[in-house]
Image (tube, rainbow, N blue to C red; front, side, top):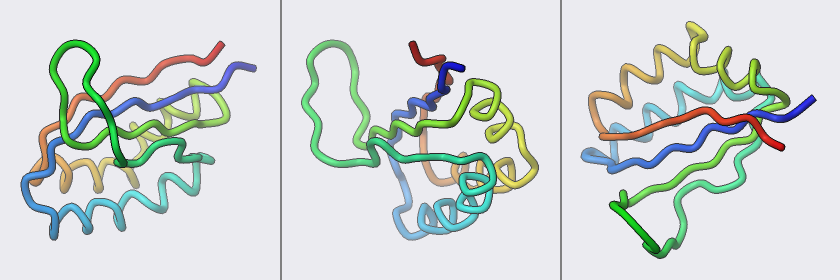
Length: 95
């Protein structure tokens, strides 16, 4: 079974409140087997627009990745994130 990945590009407007998002999202990530492959860190723009923070999260399957995002646990966290950051997020299936 192919793994699933969240790819998120984020500009955080309120770093202190973003910590609340991280804490609120933790239960969903644990429940759905999230494994962080990239979480911020140094990056270089090669093409197109960029955001300050880039995140790649691996899940056991595409369905687990989608279920995590749609879970009640994550939706509580997402509401916080949407108040304090601008982001693009996609879910992709691994090869």
